[in-house]
Image (cartoon, rainbow, N blue to C red; front, side, top):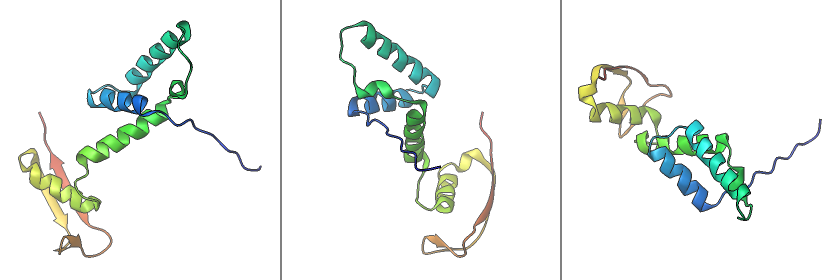
Amino acid sequence: MGNIYVFVAHLSQVIKDFEMDQLKLGFIVFQIMAKHRQHVKNIILGTCELNRDMLLTKQHVRVLFGKLVQEIYQLHKNNAKSVCMWVRQNINSMFHYQEIGVEVDGGFIGQIMSFTKGIQIP
């Protein structure tokens, strides 16, 4: 079939900051894309110059959202350790937590650490 090359435009820091601000304000991908489409319409109707920031995609917003979520909620590079840390910080939200594994010097023995947790929120 051959190689298929896809070229993706690099977005400016201005549009990346716009995306991050919208995500932090709680807007979802659909709402951010609607705002972006309106902005692009205004550019097309006006005399502004077209640029690469007009090529923003849903996928780009989703990737940035994933990075934001990871930045906020990931407490440790080791996912199992991150869960344990989260449980300790949010003990009042837990009605059940059980870990099966041994913690040694900040790490876990074995490749798999099983756990169960129950969370109750309003």
